[in-house]
Image 1 (cartoon, rainbow, N blue to C red):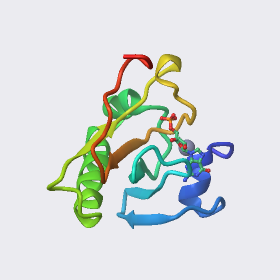
Image 2 (cartoon, rainbow, N blue to C red; image 1 turned 120 degrees about the vertical axis):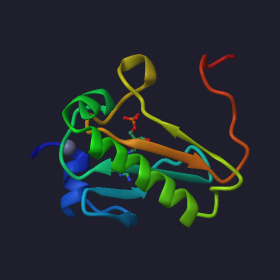
Image 3 (spheres, rainbow, N blue to C red; image 1 turned 45 degrees about the horizontal axis):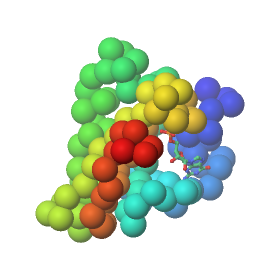
Length: 117
Ligand code: 5GP
Ligand code: ZN
């Protein structure tokens, strides 16, 4: 998709800090990190969100998760623990409409859900 930010990052048209790449996925650091380690993992092909990706290409969703786990290990947070997040829709604060997995860790993470608990 020509006007999709993450398609442009995959194509190298928008710069990013790439941490890992496979044949089908790419991982790069989030520009506005919400934890010491905050990395986004995307399928190289355009899919709207994780639910659409799961229906269209379950293996590719599995690839995204496997890349997330490999990156967690490479970042040294596989033992201390980490969180995988897929935001979907407005209430979750979704801003980029190319499926992406958030990998968060590197410190004790806060609770999530309602902003005021
Ligand atoms: P969402 O809220 O859609 O689940 O997550 C989008 C994420 O993309 C946000 O965490 C945001 O900080 C990140 N982001 C937005 N624009 C850019 C960019 O140009 N480069 C990188 N590396 N991350 C971005
Ligand atoms: Zn895209």
